[in-house]
Amino acid sequence: MSKFRKDDGKELPPISTASLPDIVFMLLFFFMVSTTMREVTLKVKMRIPEATELSKLEKKSLVSYIYIGEPLPAFQKTFGKAPRIQLNDQFAAVDEVQDFIIAEREARDEAEQPFMVTSLKIDENTRMSIVGDVKQELRKSAALNINYSSRKKAER
Amino acid sequence: MAKKIPEIPAASLADIAFMLLIFFLVTTTMDVDSGLRRKLPQWAPDQEQNDDQQINERNVFVVLVNKNNDLLVEGDYEQIENLRERAKEFMANPYNAENLPEKEPMEIPYFGEQMVTKGVISLRNDLDTQYGTYLAVQNELVAAINELRDELAKQKFGKAYVDLDGDQQDAIKKIYPSRISEAEPKGKI
Image 1 (spheres, each protein chain N blue to C red):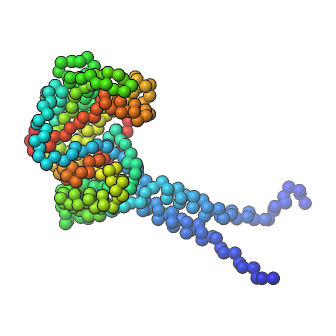
Image 2 (cartoon, one colour; image 1 turned 45 degrees about the vertical axis):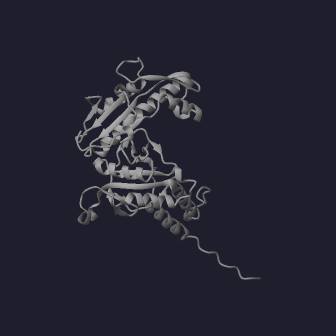
Image 3 (cartoon, rainbow over the protein chains, first blue to last red; image 1 turned 60 degrees about the vertical axis):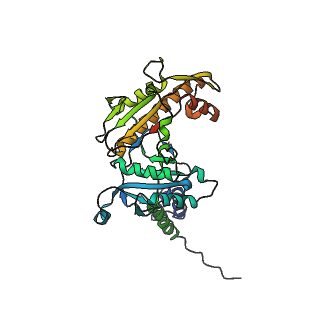
């Protein structure tokens, strides 16, 4: 009888979920655009050193990666604990670096080849002997643009 | 009248999209690859070629890193924190000191005739040096040159070095060339 209790007894309507797919798709597209696919499964442990004078690697398609570090625990039974080189998905010896660079170069356009960069992702506790060997191999295969991968150092 | 087709239920669309989203979250990485950019010297089959160009001793800034990651700069022990200042002083040589590198006049666009240093930084490491230390040293040396270039850019053009156009950057690069040479590592230093 009161004017103010009209809705008495009625239930709240359920919240419409029709827009939920749209929201999720938006998130999905955001992640698809802002991230990159993982290309290799890492078989070595790496703690990348810190530096301040960083430059970004612009064209992902022109970058080839060389990983150096201690093998992951799962591989230590067969490969031991000494730092090793990983090219693509496999452990490799130093003399395979040249073949790797040549293969990487063959896969690119001829016009783009001079701009190729080799990114060295090396654990900070690695000894320089293995790094030096890899650098010599890179020089021999004329892959002179290199990038020592490193993290941004926090400003003090 | 034709029978109305029942509407396709869209309730599961969200689940499908979530599944896709989770797949992408797992298989992709977000990190931007960045690093210290360097250029390796050309491969020379015989190591003789370095000897024919005689470099005056005062023009070389010798940095040695031993297997215990200690630094020897121009003959004395040095902490890595001080390396940047030392390298800057060496490359700039503001008071034309006798023991710091010589300069030679050079014609440079925007600057006219300018005294350009002949200094070379020579870095040598032990085979057992840790990569982390090596990179930290490289970083300090590159930072020294970058700071000098930045200071000059601010003084001449009133802008940071990275904001200059190509020609201006080239001019500054000529005044402060990035001459970091790496000798072959030796077993013992």
